[in-house]
Length: 290
Image (tube, rainbow, N blue to C red; front, top):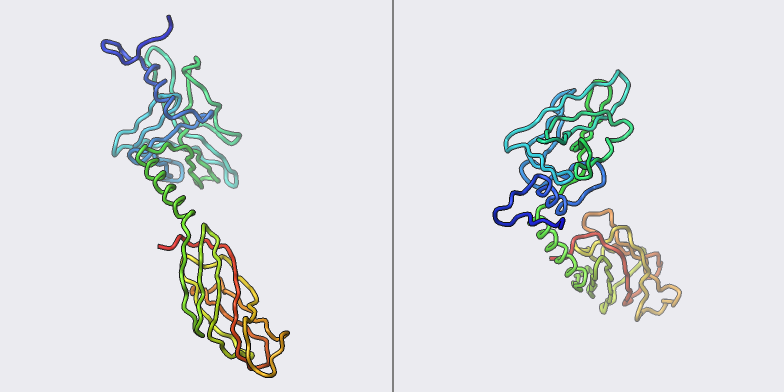
């Protein structure tokens, strides 16, 4: 029988058995990038001079092997400089070497044509690169330090799950708000997801003649992502010289203004009294209303 009890009483757990457990939890990227865990400074890498990069404390896993830099500690890596006007890239991290006692050594390798290929001690490789950062160099200066793979803690995942759940609830919630206007009447704003619909109704007629009216302002939570135009039509009118063709009222919500003013631009040359109604639908990028 090849099956083994790993953590039973009186059983000694081997390094490979321990590594198998952690590899099953974090998974494998299929590359030589190590997975940085959410502890300490998360092995943050930053340039500390024109040819040195420092990796701070944290824990990384590759193929189940855990590499730790203790709290308040760090490792410095010396980066070769390029010739003036030339660019270069270096992958930095560690090499785990197999043997009766596995060993760990720093790794700085030319990565202009890509990072080292992945290797697995579990599959019999004699050594395994664990890349933690990619450093770009221009001439004698370090111009970039990039890190890629992080594993979030269970508490971080739980917090994100709760946040997503709250957002899903908001997506399915219908928000409604009645806006005041400068000429009487009302605007009812309805939001579902990121779609806002404005229903306008002006039971109190107002005079128009070559004027611009700031009818209302659109509150946070309902503002459009771009200018929104529409034509309102009258539901009733008065005035002896008022024609049906003289009944359109052009309006725009100015998305470039912080107050999102809703401006009516009137092209009529007739002074009349009318009541208007219109519906406008648009997209918003605002956060959901409180």
